[in-house]
Length: 185
Image (tube, rainbow, N blue to C red; front, side):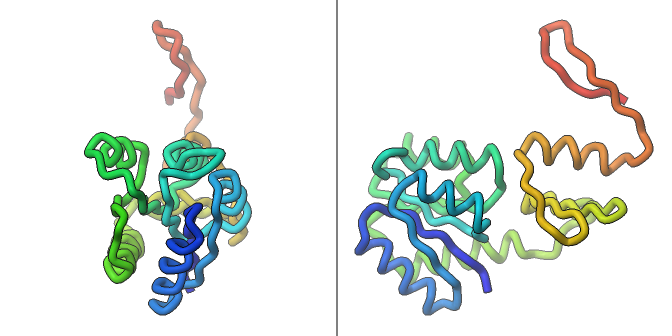
């Protein structure tokens, strides 16, 4: 059963979203602040996050920035911010969809299903990398060793994927003329 984290500081909105998503067959947990959402995402690894932007303590955009440093978890922003600039920033930061309040709970469920259909589609060749007992799922940015998930930042994941695609190759760390560091073969 897919697990969804609903993050909203308005208990009634979180309750409505939770009820509709549970009726659609999902397991749902709610959080009311950005720090709570980040802590939950780190420890429980939900399959999708429905995220309000106007949160106390830490705004939803900051939550998205932090999540994207460590995870590719799908994010649907559910917010009262209707300005085009807010939508664009949210999507540019890595949200998969953007729903404005007031919202239709049935539409939210449909959008959740659409995101899951997209990410659950059969992985394309090269999206799953296996080397020895290491498995990398590029579409979900998830790594496991011996079937146990391991936590990696997005950068660590990409480095590991690059090296796993070319086992046996030696990579050397170099600095460019602009001071940027990278790897060459």
